[in-house]
Structures are given as structure tokens and as C-alpha cells.
Image 1 (cartoon, rainbow, N blue to C red):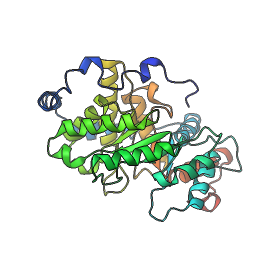
Image 2: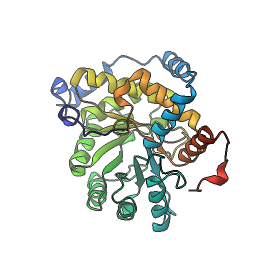
Image 3: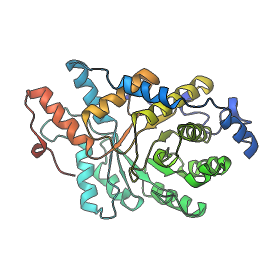
Image 4: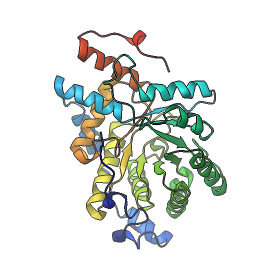
Length: 327
């Protein structure tokens, strides 16, 4: 869990870093760069992800990893039926995930729609829990740029600490990479001091090569995080697509000195799943990404399973779902 602010190197150069300044000057140069990236060996990628998923974590390390995973959660509710009461309850749970054990770490953030930001902000006030807001016509992103930017500005004005935007997947699939890049740049500017997470919706990008290209577009455009999914489609975060994105941020920092976070979201429901992802982070990007400033889980039900496993390690008994709050 991060205890120090990011360094100047970490936060500097959020526009296209100098090493790649010429890459985004035109549609043709960006296309040439993206199509010049190494092709993804799908079989090798999936085999590597599966292999890392078999690593075992012993009891002492497991207790630490569970607390670390809790501290990395963006506790999320993104439903049309969300109410102020539900968001206040979510905020209270983010601050004190287990009211019977105040040693339980808080979550990193709560993630809500823009109209619920003010309510969430009030619910977590003074706790250190951030408020993240989805924006840019989430989840489809099918709106004019002006509408998307207004969505972002509304969320920031309401107090959002972080913005989770969705890219124009249609533009990316059509090969209009510069449009995707320039839209992210515009959203970054509209976000002001709020950190920007760029959602690719990997389940709709069809190929691993497209996910790699989206990762580089997001990083070149100034994303603070790259994020797998909205959680609203059939295929969301997987070990393989997250591994690919971790490789991208590792390589990007090696070439630019700029560190970018990763957020898998959707479909991560159990402690076992979460620990597999932490192994991916450690073995691929390295220990520098093992805190909530650089790695997040977008989740709702995951927290309850982590709490139950935490109680089991502490007491030797599995309490079951009746002993945690229902979201």
C-alpha cells in the first residue's frame, strides 16, 4: 500500500513522452508505429498466463496478499437502479470493509456514475478512499466528443478524484488510431488533476494485437492507468489480456521513464483469482506495481470473498457469506 506521493518522474510527461514525440504527429506515423509493434504470440501468451496462475502462495504471504488485494479494489456499483442509500452503504464498506476488525485495510476507491460522485465523496470523506467516476458515455462510448467531455467535467466538478473513460472501440477497430489517441488527450485535459483510467473493453477488440495497440495508444496519450473492461460485456478481465497490458506498461516505462498503472475489471470474484493476478503483476511488471497507486481491481463481489478468506486465516474457521454485508 503506497505511503508516499508519486515522484516527479512518475507523474511527468503525461503528454506523448519525448522518446515518442513524433509518433503521434499524424495518422500515418501512428499507424506505422502501432503496426510495427511485435505481433502477439497468442499461444505463448496464454500458456505464460496459465503457468503463472499455478504458483502457490504460503500462509504468511497469503495473509499479506489478501490485505494487499483489498487495498487495491475499486469497489464498484454501476447500475441504473443505484440510489444514494446504496452508494452511501458502498462508501461505508470501502472505508471499513469489516466493521468487526478495524485492522482490515480500506479499499482504494469507490467507483460510481457521475451523478453519484457527490454522494460517494461525502460517504468517504476524510478516509483516504478515492472516488472514481466512469464517464464519456460509459459503457458504449457512443456519443459526440463534446458530450463526453461534458460528462467528464461534471464528474470532476462533483469531486471525482479519478475518471474511468471508455475508448471509441469502433474507431480503433476501423484503424482510426489517431482519433482514439486525440480523444484520450482531450479527456485527459478535461480531467484536470483527476487521474485518468482508459478502458479498452478488451472483449470487443477481437485480437491480442489490438489490445497491445490500444495499450500503447492509451499510454502515448497520457493515461495514468490502462483498464481492461467495463464489466458490461461477456468477456472482461482475463489473465492473458492483463498479462499483455502489464508487459506494455513495463516496456513503456523502460523506454520513457513514465510509469502507468493497470486495472483489470469484471469477472474477478474470488480470492484465488485475485492472488493469481498479483502473481502476474509481480512476475511481469515487478514489485513497483504492487500497490494501489499502480494496480487496481475493478470489482464488487470480490471484496466479500477476500474478507471471508481473511477471517478464515485469522480464526481457522470459514464464516461464510452470512457474515459479510450483501452489496
